[in-house]
Length: 65
Picture 1 (cartoon, helix red, strand yellow):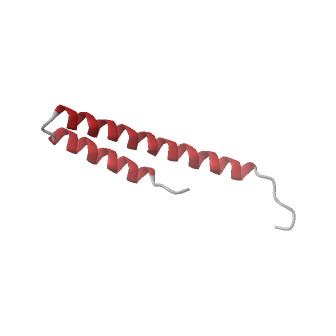
Picture 2 (cartoon, one colour):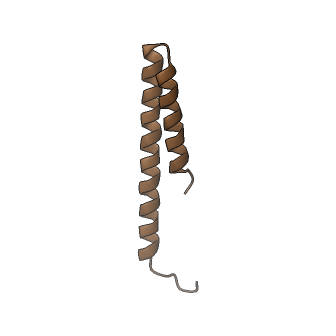
Picture 3 (cartoon, rainbow, N blue to C red):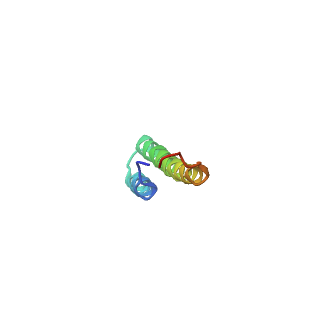
């Protein structure tokens, strides 16, 4: 599965750091919103990986493989 939850969380942390340094309310808000999106993406990637793993474990073998 493409995507790395750890990398997404690092992007989220970078957004939070930049938000703390932002001079404007709108800049802070935008960066914090972006951080939330990175966190959600990390969670979705983890869920997708778990689902894929579970499906692979219950998938019946195909004849001839």
